[in-house]
Length: 57
Image (cartoon, rainbow, N blue to C red; front, top):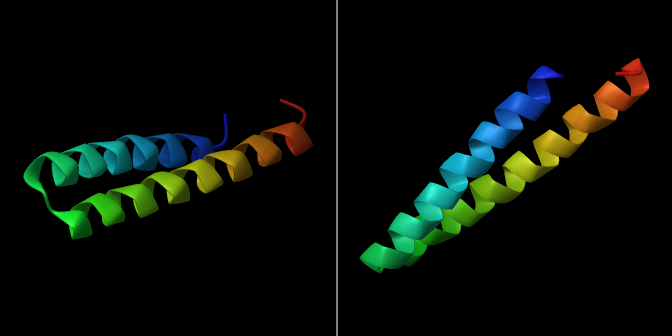
């Protein structure tokens, strides 16, 4: 498993947590940051998956 997949998954989890906390607290900025982190994690996870595919894993 590529390092990018692990880091991407962690970012997705952190982003989801930020998004939920922002929504509960009524903090639109925190909610938007969480959404951005979540998307960034998804992209990084996809890149890691592509690397794994290219390596034949």
